[in-house]
Image 1 (cartoon, one colour):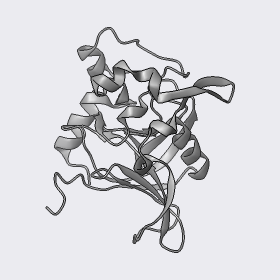
Image 2 (cartoon, rainbow, N blue to C red; image 1 turned 180 degrees about the horizontal axis):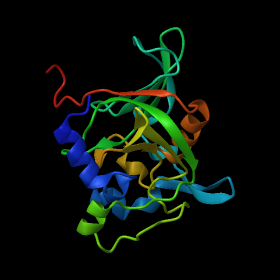
Image 3 (cartoon, rainbow, N blue to C red; image 1 turned 30 degrees about the horizontal axis):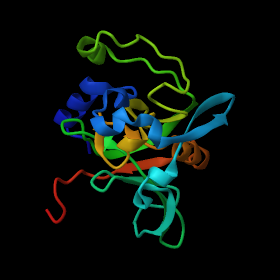
Amino acid sequence: MITRRQFVGAAAGAAVGAGLLATAPRRAEANAAAWFAGTAEDNGVVYRATDFRKIKPVWRRQLVKYTSSEPQGTVVVDTQNHFLYLIFENQTALRYGVGVGKEGFKWYGRAQIDRKAIWPGWTPPPEMLARRPELPRYMAGGPDNPLGPRALYLYRDGSDLGYRLHGTVEPWSIGSDVSSGCIRMFPEDVIDLYQRCPIGTKVLVLQHIAAKGT
């Protein structure tokens, strides 16, 4: 479960779509255009398509063997190894590479997808605006919105946890601890996941362990 310290730290840092303030590698950011290959259209919105030739194979969406006690259809996020699994039958899962919370913003526990949005808008929470007053008070959905083409909103007991599974405009950040608690995905991957996860989908975010074997 999320501890009070983890929850307060993460929520204060970023509740809705905190990926905007991610610290991406400066070299990758400086060469951002190299990570895209043309454009694609989704629901009338034209966005930059990820150049998967530049993405390490480990982070690409793929069917893998995966043993879990969670039922079929559950989303399991392995924050330590930067993978999101959608559990299939026969000990298999569809695995996606993800970016997760940076130090001080990690969280774990169970949740449920109770809301979904296509090209969602983004409203920075007051805590974020206090730190970054130059941010817009609201950003409409679109190709430059930090939530990307889809957002799946995580709830527990009917309450919005402030965390989302969403897209990113920074493909180089997948596979890193970069966000303020949200789980970010390639735009193409979050579109795929959105189609596979109905409202009510169960989500388990595994505890982030500092080092393997500890």
